[in-house]
Length: 550
Image 1 (cartoon, helix red, strand yellow):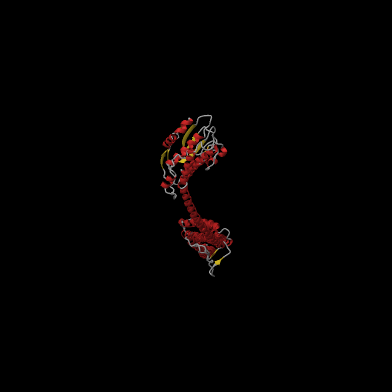
Image 2: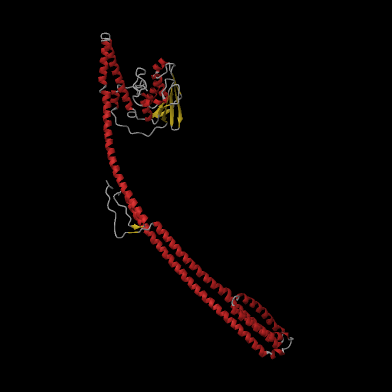
């Protein structure tokens, strides 16, 4: 049989198994990847923060401070230009640039002090500019501006040299402040450039590491999927019928290797079970052949019992009856008694053989289901028992009975056995009252035959359905003890059950169920030719078992 031999497991130097399980590999990979990504994320965040800080210093402090310093210088120059023009012309219009310059100076100073907060050297330079501007205004600008308009101011000419010297000092201090702020701006720009370059390097590194992690994850998954694919191929080959194909993993984590080992053990166990199943099937085939042979022998025996034994029994019975008629009264009383025993034994033997043949034919010769009108069957059965009913004064009634799928002959035998038993086992104290009831219960019909006879003791409720089991002697109630066994076999053949209602008192109540729909068809068994068996049975009628005992 395929699968009874097992090849050695594959071996080779290409195998690379590890003691780590898939869960351990995946867990370690996830932890390492997350750790690396967290470090890279922190580094990237720090690079972004550095770039943002440099950008904020450049755009939010140094550049605006330099612009404000330029505006301050422009405001001072505007003041000096206005004062010089007013001194030369005495026109009041030249004082407007001076006045506007003062306003612009105040705004620029406020802005610079706000932007340069914390920068001591720059604030000191700003203070120097303001101090020198205050000296220039005190010595030159304010006296000239206070002079009457309309004519050139002589004071301007007198103080021209001092005014030029003072304002050059203002210009020098302003240049010093501007140079310092330009240096701060240049440093901020350089820091921003460095921060951007560092950020680019960090994010390039992050991208490269992410690619490396993705590659490592791909390789790690291949280390899992490749063994799984190999295992799947082996399993499919085994499932396709190659039970001798070994299941072995070429590599992979420890748990996958263990899985391959478990599958291989399961395959070997399956091979063993299949071999065992083949041996059992062979034994079952042998036993089935023995059963067929035994059934054939039993059928032959049944044919012999129905044909070959009937003739000798008829001869014995006939000659015993001839002896009884011819020599009645000529022999002594004991001889007549012996002859009566012989005649009775031969007759009972014939009846018993016919009953056994009828019992064996249930479900064998009659297997065709047709709609059976139980009302009609009940009427025919009551007519067949008319003599016994009339002699005993029995009252037999029935509810409207259904039409069921079944075998007409066997259902007739069933009702005849039940009704005849109800008549036979009547109470000596009252006439028989027998009722047949019917009701639908799901997929079955429940029929009950109730009488007011001697009843059945609950302890014998199952025994009475066993063939040849009698509860009374033949002198009390004649019969072969096969009637209810026959009823049980007929009911089971029709897909139902039969039992004694042990809760019923005042008589016996036999409850049986019959399938409302025809059961699945059954292949008929091989049997002796129906004509031969029927002929051998001596034309056994449907009600031949009517006299059988419970």
